[in-house]
Image 1 (cartoon, rainbow, N blue to C red):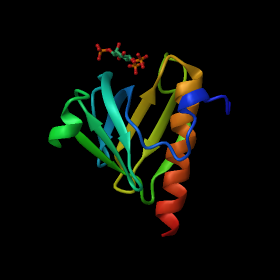
Image 2: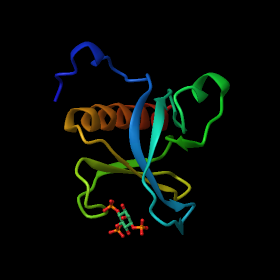
Image 3: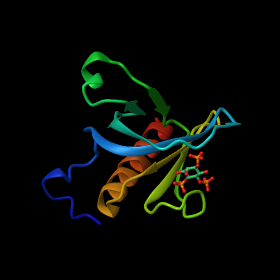
Image 4: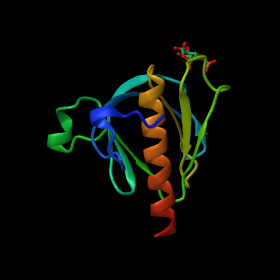
Length: 121
Ligand code: I3P
């Protein structure tokens, strides 16, 4: 933890590839389908793009609203390592994962801070 090297800025708002599975959409269970997404954190949203290039064309695949969301590590909802879950205030559930523990931890911390600050605002 904390050894982010050249990338270790806080809060983290730049893009990176993460594995994402949306397991609930507004309370409705979804079939788990892990997809590598280009992920960009803003001050109150996590933007998910299929391709890095789509960031420039605003071709978002999904937007995770972080105000009022809950984030937690989970070892029960996947056989993968370094998995955390975001539950939005509308009941959508996302699993996020990276093979690198440092990468997963960096995003977990940045998203948690974003949830805290956007929920207080
Ligand atoms: C799922 C797929 C997922 C797996 C999930 C399977 O099968 O293998 O990768 O989740 O396990 O059901 P399918 O492609 O046929 O839908 P993990 O990789 O996170 O373990 P689960 O049902 O135990 O969630």
